[in-house]
Image 1 (cartoon, rainbow, N blue to C red):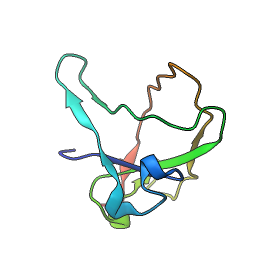
Image 2: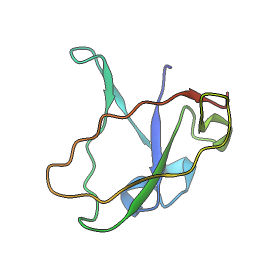
Image 3: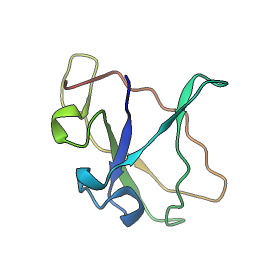
Image 4: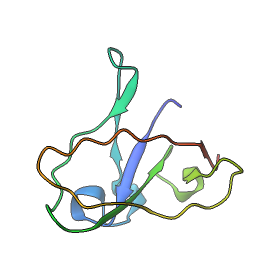
Length: 89
């Protein structure tokens, strides 16, 4: 996909306002999309990926089904390597 954004439950992730979603950048060297965000350590954070700043581009499961929000509890130095099955659009 050309553009990839993350939106979620904290202010750093837009408080679920998809218009405030943060764009990830594509790293040519590692062939992955990356983003660095400071998140509240020790608190549960929910998030999703979208291809446009609109819920019509939200990530979906392998059969294009709705998926639950992704959930993490950030700790210092946390790095995630996630797979996205497909998108709505």
